[in-house]
Image 1 (tube, rainbow, N blue to C red):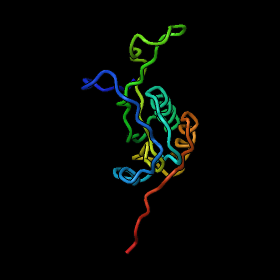
Image 2 (tube, rainbow, N blue to C red; image 1 turned 45 degrees about the vertical axis):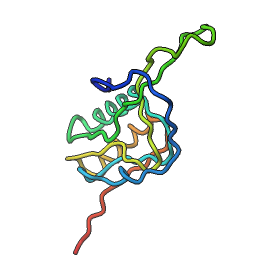
Image 3 (cartoon, rainbow, N blue to C red; image 1 turned 90 degrees about the horizontal axis):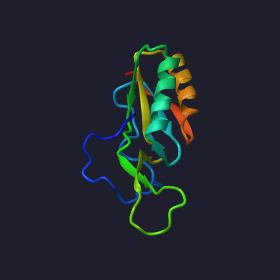
Image 4 (cartoon, rainbow, N blue to C red; image 1 turned 180 degrees about the vertical axis):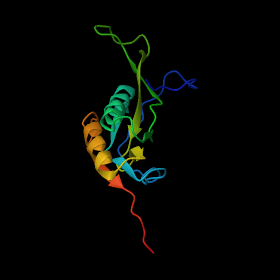
Length: 139
């Protein structure tokens, strides 16, 4: 499971994600990738299960690069507890994903295999995604 080694703060204020991504919206290391089409929160479990299914579909060939990391702690109070008494304890880690962000990149596989892996992996995610490929400029 993914989580930060040594966070500065154990509990954080809530950050909303409902913007467009302008930084991490292009492929950098690989030729194919998965891009988010809407804003959402991704938990560490969702990321890990998507990565595992994609690796299984690719038959452990090539490489999958994660471009998001769950670094936001989410707290939760136990069931049937009265109001007050402070903030709840740490429940899980997640990451805010804005629309247009690259989530995964694929290296060392064919386009057809990368497309199949992206399709199976995106079923594990709580958002709409799109398969993207690097445009090669022929000059």
